[in-house]
Image (tube, rainbow, N blue to C red; front, side):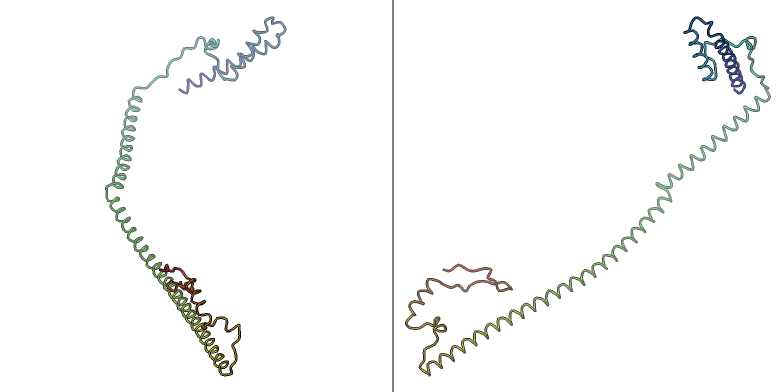
Length: 246
């Protein structure tokens, strides 16, 4: 193969030098060439030959190589036998190495899938799962304790607030009752004082009194505007439900 490459390279160099010399001659006597197209085609062929580094298939053989006969190099029979034996040994060794590597790959794959390595991996994954579950249970327990403490504090705060609201309503009710009792006592005292002195009560104070003169009028007013005290109230004292009057 090396002799063939050297031969092709020398042929290309020789052809290139010959074509270059012809180009120079054509350029010197270009004025004497009557056919311009022939001149252009020759230049394109030479340029293509120089660019490619070899001659085309249709180019004739070089003049310096017309009488050259290519003969293959001589082969030593003894050397050929030795080379064949070495190549056979090389092929066997390479095939054995390839089979050994393939067996190692298959054995590793088998161990990873169903062998001892798979069993160890399964144990390792189970142990990791148990450790993660233990950590998860501990974390859930910690968060549960925090949540229970928070809920307990919120419950205590709500209970305290409810008690304070109940005490406040009781205090307001007691204050209201005391105020009404005071007003009633004050009214009774004023009436007794007025009766003892033979004086009439104040018109502003006596406008809500029920006397024999306005008894019928007050009865008619009560019948026309009945009061229903059967109702429910919320914690703030607002009426939320009232039953219908029969």
